[in-house]
Length: 430
Image (cartoon, rainbow, N blue to C red; front, side, top):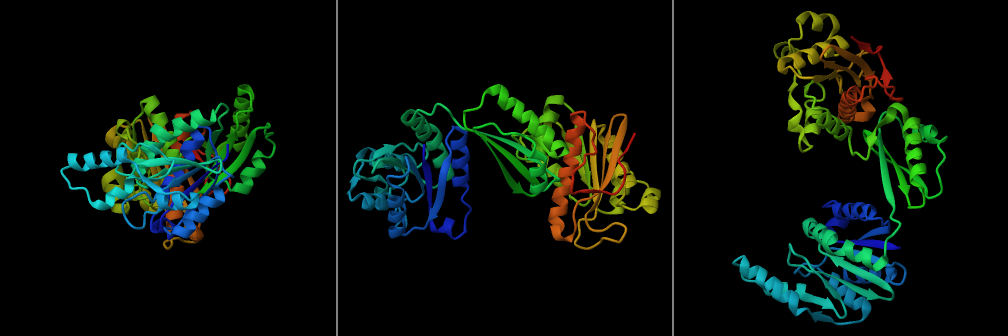
């Protein structure tokens, strides 16, 4: 099945807004077993829209068009489709009655401009929009189905899930859906990961890809319905083994999500103690609904005085070892865990830059500690340098800290070999 997508709007084309609709549609279609062949963005210009529709006609089985169905003069999708087909716009009385009733229910007079939203190309089939005033429609031209949806994300998603995806399944009898399986990694570059995976033999029907988004690289395995289940499961095990310590989890978007799932299942409680990351670890977890079940609290102890008063780090430890040290990280984690009698505490203290480093502890030097009932684990790594920028070092530090929690919960060695993160001290544990 050949499917394309055309996103419309000057604000998308000029970068004033990010096209989240296109990304969502691509992902949602893949979940349903359909791969998009191409996606383009076209501005609110009649000739460009007509040209885009004409180029796809007779080539694609389906073209999804998003946007341009509103009541204003720059909403041109319906008119452009009619012009491309050489047909007239026809009033859909049923939809006009629907939007008139919508305005009446909301105690508002309907502007005359909204009549435009009930004008569809001759021969079009209306697609219901239960949450807005712009109906969608589909029309067949030169062997291609053109399917139009409004721009607001809520309306698009409602129509895709309720109307368009069921229609696609019926119309094209999707029986061997594609499956995208994702594995999240960190600490290794794409070329290093490619070398690690070189020994893995891919069966026919599976493609391997990579997606880099700091601090992660995502391994993508695309299964097109031709691989036996036993071979597929074997392949997943082989890829995980080849990735080694770089592997963070399957089908998760962040290491925080992997930790979140484990903490919920195991019923463990966690506290955080952060310096250079400024609460980033706690924030990553709070982003996930349900984190209140395990996240008891967190401290941002940026100054030495705060480390002493809030977490009971001794003045002697700070004077002898410095704020950026495994000794201080251990004291922070132990102090935070004791404060709330938590199962686990994770701490971070480091030099995020761009200034503040020294020859002994340059920018990117970060100490970590994980304290638990009966022991602790601590390590110091060099995560990056000024080239990575302050935000890059902080993101990498939060990722390593959360991975320490993840590895602890899985019963694995807490100190991992991350490849391009330099170990500055041996892993310490008790």
